[in-house]
Length: 175
Image (cartoon, rainbow, N blue to C red):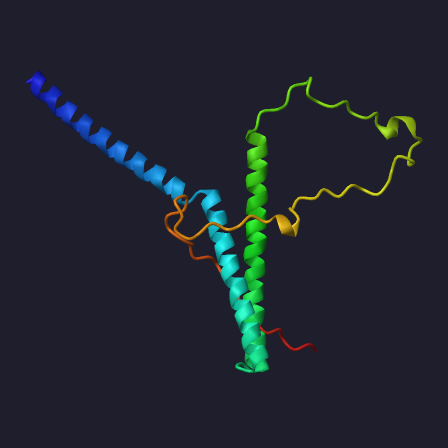
């Protein structure tokens, strides 16, 4: 009887191990599909689409195919969407850069250049002050990376649906 109970327990163990392996495989696939790099590619592809639509709307207006009254709200929505996606892409890009920088090993002490002597130690109080240094967190516009193609090996699903900006509600009349 003990052997039969042991055989049943081993069968249950095999089933649990198979279930665990299947769930781990699904988890790895999901983590790859929803990686930050893949999301950045989707955002950049959606940004390109929004900018192309805005260009097409401008061309229609200039050719006289669309009235100004119909053009303005549609163009404003499209540009707001493009701005939102550009901002999201830039912030995600910066987050990924920070993550990569923190993952890189720190340089050795011998490789560090000598640090300048602080001016505050030599100059009287208040003289060391100057205009505050403004850190530049975003890359120049001409250095933006090219968005990957939809359905590329790194992102097999294509662009994910993104939230659009909330439609603007009319302001109440001023009193």
